Length: 319
Image 1 (tube, helix red, strand yellow):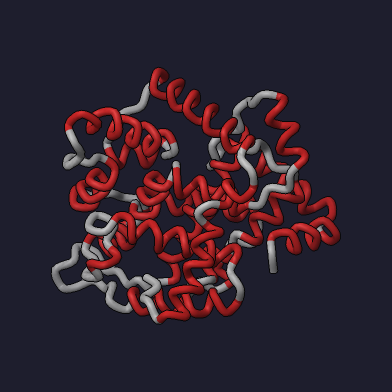
Image 2 (cartoon, rainbow, N blue to C red):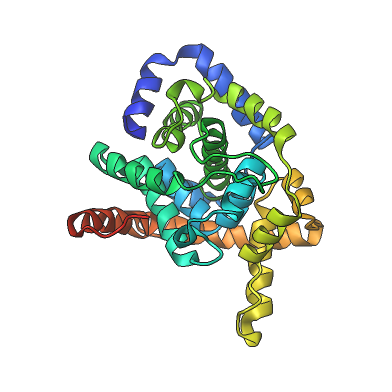
């Protein structure tokens, strides 16, 4: 079911009860609950978005492009995920060794989950499963993990969904109750495209907020995973002329999109000056997104689905 179909279904059947639940949670998000607050944007931007019908995948694209590193940090903050990635023996999929390939794999997964056909989802799931079979803890691993662990996959999906809502708030604005509930229900595909069972996805937005807060008790980034994540954000092998400004900007975005709990785990500092700078950057980005035509807003998802079909036809590895 597409987001639009889900939106229509919710609009027809939700009733006052869902409206009250969604309004409560979205209102809490605006007051800095588990989501980033909705900033004030110029009236012209609100008018632009009012004339459009943005899709949640619009927000997920910008999660990938701007908030991607922060989202990876949240995902890997669960020790099972963190060590599973940092210790992965699937070298072709390691972000520290092949960052462009890893980004393509992640972007394609998001594109397939939200906009792919059933056939595309099936073929991509088989490809990802093939890589995941090799991701298991060893006797030397400090924690036990398995890439097929549905609980860990649910956490990764929850991080992606939360990131999508955060970016939506920053770029598009607050969601109305029906849209919030529809996007939440459609967000389950972020996990069910792999092994997460539909019944595992928290039943509504209020349940998701409880799940998120309870999951924070299992968040911990140790030295090994922290080093891996720092190396993903700060690149020491860049040319000296551009190294400092690029790393400073990357660190600003990564830290800015992180909740404070995760900043503390990474041992990254934050202050009012950096917050104001982060807010200015997002204000510029949100204006650019608002003025961009749909094909540009959908890039690279639109091309990645075409690339997926090309790889299938030619027998090229998908991940």
